[in-house]
Amino acid sequence: MTKILIIYTGGTIGMVNDADTGALIPFNFKQIQQNVPELARLNYNLEVYSFDPIMDSSNMHPDIWAEMAQLIFTRYDEFDGFVILHGSDTMAFTASALSFMLQNLSKPVILTGSQLPIGEIRTDAKENLITALEIAATKENGKAKIPEVCIYFDSQLFRGNRSIKYNSEKFEAFRSPNYPVLAEAGVHLTFFNNYILPQPEKELQVLLDFNSNIGVLKMYPGISEQAVMAITHSSVDAIVLETFGSGNTTTAEWFIACLQEAITKGKIIVDISQCQRGSVELGKYETSKKLQEMGVISGYDMTFEATVTKLMYLLAQGHGKDEVIKLMEQSLRGELTLS
Ligand code: ASP
Image (cartoon, rainbow, N blue to C red; front, side):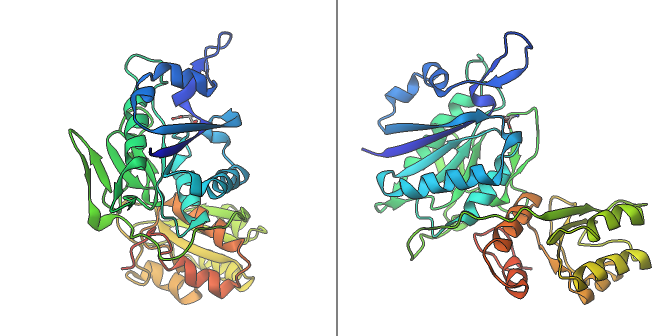
C-alpha cells in the first residue's frame, strides 16, 4: 500500500477563530482529520507528523526548514511521498529552500495549504489536500512521477522554486510566472512530462545550513544615497538587487560607486527583476552595462524567493566567493532558465 507522510506545520488550513480576539490561530491536526473524513477512504497508508508548536507561516525560519528537511531525510525510505501542510504566506520560500536542501530527490515533496480553514463550508482545503496526496502517490514504471519539491494549489502543480504567492484572497493563490505548470487537476490528473525534472542518478543528500546574512535593495525612482548605503555599507555577505525591467538601475555616479565599493569589499550582488515575467539581461541597456562590468551577477528569471534561499544556501556550504557566483548563475534544481 502507498505510504505517505503528512507533515503538518500550520497555516490557515488548520486554523480556528480565537474565542477572545476573533483572530485566526493555528489548531492541532486532529481538527483537520475530523473535517476530512475522505482521508480514511483514500487507499493510502497515511502517517501524520505535526510540528510543535504549529505556526502561522509568517513566523517561518531557516531552522524550521532544516527540521523539515532532516525529517524527510530520516524517514525517506519508509514513504513513497511527502505532503507538507503549510501556510501560504511563505510557502514559496519553504518550497524553494527545500528544493536546494534535498539534493538528488527521487520522491515527491508536495506543499499545500488553503485560503479558507478546513472547517469552513466553502473551504479550498479538502481539494488541495486530497489532490496533493494523489500526486504524491502517483508512480510511473515503479518510480515516483514527481521527483521534485512542488506546490499544489487550486488545481495546479507548480515547481516549488518557481512559485510565488500571487493573491491573498483568491483560491488561485500561487503562480509560476516563468515556468509552466507541471500538472493540472480536472476530471483527470494531467501531468506535463516535458517540464518535470528527471529521476536523479545519485542518492539523496541533505544539506541543512543557511546563512541568512543577506540584504535586499529594491530600486525605485528617487532612492536616496542613505537608503542605498544602509545596505551596501552594512555587514551583509550578499545583496539581492531588485531592479527595473531587464535588470536596470539608475546610472547616478554615487549609486554605481556604492555598489562598486560593496563588491570590492567582497559582497556578492545578484540582480533580479521587479517584473514577475521575463529575465535579467545584463548589458542590454546602458543602465545595466556598468553593473555587468563591475561584477554584479545575473539572477536571470529567478523568483525573489528562489534567489534569497539559494544565496542563503550557497553561502553556508563553505564555497569560496567565486564558486558561489558560478553556482548562482547555474540551474541547480530547475530554478532558472539561462538566456
Ligand atoms: N497567514 C497564513 C500563513 O501563512 C496564511 C495561510 O495559511 O494561507 O500561515
